[in-house]
Length: 481
Image (cartoon, rainbow, N blue to C red; front, side, top):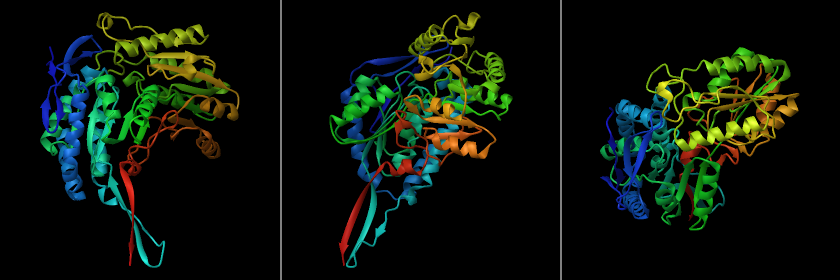
C-alpha cells in the first residue's frame, strides 16, 4: 500500500495545521481509497497567510531582479529534483495519466525559469510631455497576490508563480480541495528555497479558504483558474470589498473547424488527441466540438470512433495507459448527466458512455471515452462545458455556417482550424472568437505566447510577458527641471 499523505499548510515559512482543527480527506479516484488529508483552512488561517505575505513583501520587493531570479531558479531546481515524488502523488490524487502529468511538472519548471529571465524587462517609459520637466513611469508590485488553482493540473498551476514573484509580489495560494496532496510537497520545497512568507499555501474548500482570500482587504490582485460560475462569483465577491485586479482563466467549449481539403486520418488523430482523454477531458482547452463538412463527416467519424475505442484505459500509473478515471464522483456524475442529455436530445452515441468492464473498474470514477455523432446546436452537449471525456461531432454546410457554429456558445478559449488553404485559414482564425487558435494543430502551448480566453472564458493572459506585467501597477512621475 502506498504512503498515506498527512499534509500541512505553509504560512510564514512554517508547516502548520489549521486553526479550525479540521481536515479534508483526499480520495484516489481509481479506487475510492482515502490516500491522504490536508488541513481545512478557515478565515483565521487565510488572514495569517495574507499577513505573513505582507510582512515579507518589503524585503522581497527590495531585492534586485538578479537576486529574485536566483531564488526562483533555486526553487525550480528543487521542484525538478522532487519531480518523481510529486508525480507519484498526483497520479493517485488526480487520476491523470503519468505520461501527461510528467509534462505538467516539466512545464511548471520551464515557466518559472522563463519568468526568472524576464525580470529586467519590467521597464517603465520616459515621455516627452513638456520641455521643462522629466516625465517617466515605473512599474511597482501590488503587494499580496491571491492565486486559486483547479484540480485538473494541480502542480502545474500551483507551482507556476514566477510572474508575480519576479514582479516583486508575495503570494497566497489556495489549491483545489479535490486534488490537494501535491501542494503539501510544494510547501516543503518552498520552505527550503524561498524566504519565509514570500509564498504561502492554504488548503481548504471554497467557503473556508477561497472566499476569505478573495474578500481579504489586503489582497489587491487575484488570479483564478476554474469554472465560469466560480469566476463570476469571485468577481462579485472581490468587488464587494474593494477595487481589485482579477484575472480569470475559465472554461471552454472549444471547436475544431475542419475544412474539406483536410486529411481525414490526420483530423481524426488530432481530434482524439485534442480531446485530452489522458485527463479524461478535464482540461479547459479540450477540443469537444468537431465541426465537419458533409464530404468528410463519415470518414472522420469512423476513424474517431476507432481511435477512441482503442485508447488503453486502466491504472494511470502505467506508461501505456491512455485514460484513467475521472477526478471525483461529482465530475463523474456530471458527465453521466450530460451523456443522458445527449441521448435524450437525439444525438447518436457511437462510442463509450458507460463504465468500462473488468474487475479493476468496479470501484472508482471510471467512464469510457465517449463520442456523439449528429450533434446539433440546440443540444446541451453542444452548448455547455461538460469537463469530461465527451466529444461531439457536428455537420456544417459552408464556411459561414462553420464559423457561426464555432462562435455560437458563451465560451471562447481555444479553437483549432484544419485546412491547407492559407486564405481560408487566415479568414477562419480572424473570425473565430477564441483567445488561442491553432492552425493544423491542437493542444500545444508555446511559452511566451499569451494563453487566455474571449467571452466567458476569461480575462487576462498567462504564459507570456503580459502575465508578469499584470502583476504590476504603473506609477507616473513628473520632475520639474
